[in-house]
Image 1: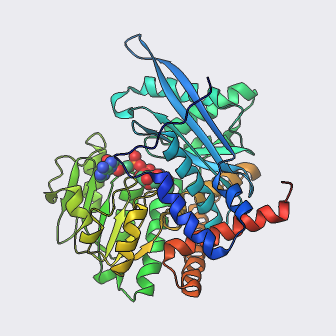
Image 2 (image 1 turned 45 degrees about the vertical axis):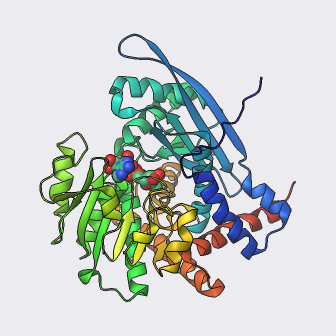
Image 3 (image 1 turned 90 degrees about the vertical axis):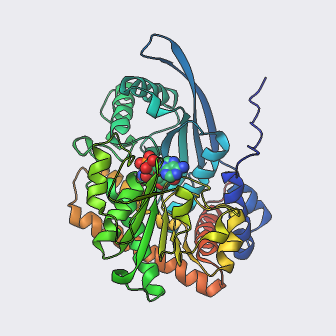
Length: 424
Ligand code: NAD
C-alpha cells in the first residue's frame, strides 16, 4: 500500500494552510496564471524515511525523517533540519515553501527545502543524536548535495550536527565535501558570522522598520520570545543598538524587567544552565502569553510557529512585530493585526539573514577562500536592507501589508524564472 498522507492536525493551526493562504492572496495580486499557480504550490520532491537507531540502553528505536524540496528552479534547494517531537510532513512542506520565498525575497540563487526528524533531542544523549543524524544523512544521500540540496541548522540542530553530516556524506563520496551543508563549525569550512546571522538580520530589519515609523531606537522597547539562536542574538544586538529589551522568554516562561534585561547576564546564565533561562533572577517571571501582549514598541517572536493566533492577536500592544521565527503568526491573526495598524516585518524577510550568510558560507567553500567577519557582516546587512526596501516599496505600490508584499516580490521572481526556463 502506498503512503497515506496524514490528515491535517485539527487541534492546531496548520502552518501549511497559513502559508498557502498568504501565497494565494499574493498570487492573485501578481496575476499569475492558474497553471503557474499549480506549479508553484506543489513541492518538487517529498521524501519520508524510517531511521532505526540503537539507543544507549541497547534497544532499537525507529524515527521518522523528512526532506521536502519545494523548488530548485532558482538554484540548489536550501533549508534547515529540525529536530522536534511535533515535526510532521505538513510542517516540513510549509517550511520548505517558505525557504523558496525567503531566498527569492533576499535575491540569492537558491530554491527552498526543509528537513525534519520527529524526535525529542532534549531526552536523547549526544551519542543517540549522532547516530540518528548519521542515519538521516545516509538515507538522504541521493537527495542532498552541494549542487542539489544543501541542509543547514534549524530548531534542535547546530554546527555539531552539520559536522556529522559532512563526515557521513564525505565518507560516502570518498572525499571531503564540506559544502554539502552550511552552518558548520569554523574549522570545517563554516563562515564567520553564521551563528549570529539570523538574529543580526532580525535587528537590521527591525531598525529599518523603526526608521520608517520614525521611532528612535534609543527610546524604543522590545520583547523577544525564544532565547535560542535567533532570539538571544536578536536581543543582544537590539540592546547593542540602543533598544531596551524589557522581556525575553524561552520554553521555561517569560522574564520581564521594565528597566531592561541584562542580556549578557541572561546569555551567560542560560549557557551555564543547560541552555534554559529557568531560575534567571534578573527579572520578574511572566508567562509566554503575557510577554506577547506587553506594551512594547517591538515584539520579536523568535521561538516557533503559530504563537500569535486569532485567540491572542487582539491583545497585542506592540507597534511592530518582527518575525524571527518561521510562521509565528497564523493566517487567522493577520486581519486582526492589520486592523490594529501594527507593522509586521514578515518571517520570509526578517529571518533571512541566516540563509544569506549560509549562502556566503557556500560561496566561500566553492572559491576556497575565507572572508573576514567585517566583509560578511557588511554584505549581509546590505542584502537585508535592500530586501527590506524592496518589500517596503512593493507594499506602498500595491497598498498591501509587508507580508503580502514579500510574497509578491518572491512569487513574481520565481514565476518569471519558470517562464524563462520553460520545459513543462
Ligand atoms: P533554538 O532551538 O536555538 O531556540 C528555540 C528557542 O525557543 C529556545 O529558547 C526554546 O526554549 C524556545 N521555545 C521553544 N518553545 C517555546 C515556547 N512554546 N514558548 C517560548 N519559547 C519557546 O531555535 P532557533 O534556531 O533560534 O529557531 C527559532 C525559530 O527561528 C524557528 O522558527 C526557526 O525555524 C527560525 N529560524 C531559525 C534560523 C536559524 O538560523 N537558526 C533561521 C531562520 C529561521
